[in-house]
Amino acid sequence: MGTLRVWVLVGAILVPGLGCGTGAGAGAVAVTDAAATDQNAEADAAANDDAANDSAQGDAVEGDTASADADAATSDAAPACTPSPRASAPQELGGARPAPVFLPKAWDGCTRYPLVILLHGYSASGGVQDAYLGFSARVDSQGFVLVVPEGTMAPNNNQFWNATDACCDFYGQKIDDVSYLRGLIDAAVKSFAVDPERVYLFGHSNGGFMAYRMACEASDVVTGITSLAGAVVGKASLCTPSRPVHVLQIHGTNDATIGYDGGALFPSAQQAVQRWRDLNACEGEPLAGGPFDYDSAVTGAETAEQRWKTCAQGVEVGLWTMKGSKHIPGINDAFRDAALKWLLAGRRTP
Image (cartoon, rainbow, N blue to C red; front, side, top):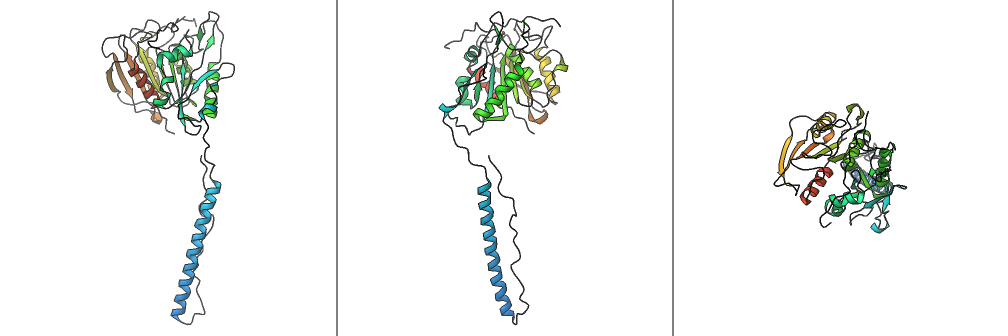
């Protein structure tokens, strides 16, 4: 298949202002009937006295048993988590391709925070993408661990993710970015007490393509993704997730780089959402929201929301159509807060 060279010039963005274990098994100590019959009793009164005494002894046995069970439960329980100072946590992950990590101030190594991985656009960098979206400034207010990795440098000095035929391994370097991002997720779970059931990716443009690829090929470790001006792989047969994934597509109708209506090698925003509605077995009509004013470069409230909430395992599929917005929307803080809130709300039931 031929390759469509999609030049996503994000690098020129101008940013204004720039355990618990279980206890002992129940019933480990059997309690027997302590009221023995005295066959030699000669009077009802004596028999009654014996029964009373035996009952008291039985209560004592039960008390001892309860105490023993409580002690066993205490001794068998997993030790409580010992908090770690935030300053002692690693500042990056990824080995030869290091990715900086941003932790909430309240991080203590015990609280299970969700993980967000931010994927930059073609020719951009993790730092540029974070400056544009402002995610690192929100790790405290929205409560999550953020990892901001870098793609691979191409011979033309542009960083890219090897996502699909459409975007953006233009020099055939065949980087295994799925394995790389899996490694980051695994390392974050081990190093930062990340909740493995709340792992999310947010990607812009080429990063959005890559987020979709992870949803297709790594749904066992990815809970949800958001693609801003990106697209899912063109061939439906190449996307076979093993579990439902929480998915949001955000796209401007005036995007001249990754068209809202699709291209030769990638589907439209509407088709991408339909694909994931089918994959996630969503039913019924969408809930409508908006319009919202998320793009300061467009006059008025330009963003309309569609949200399918009745999907397998409790996931959702959503589409934000930004009428009049371009490939790099002039997003405001309302967008930044709402986009993160939508992503972090994603859950998947067993």
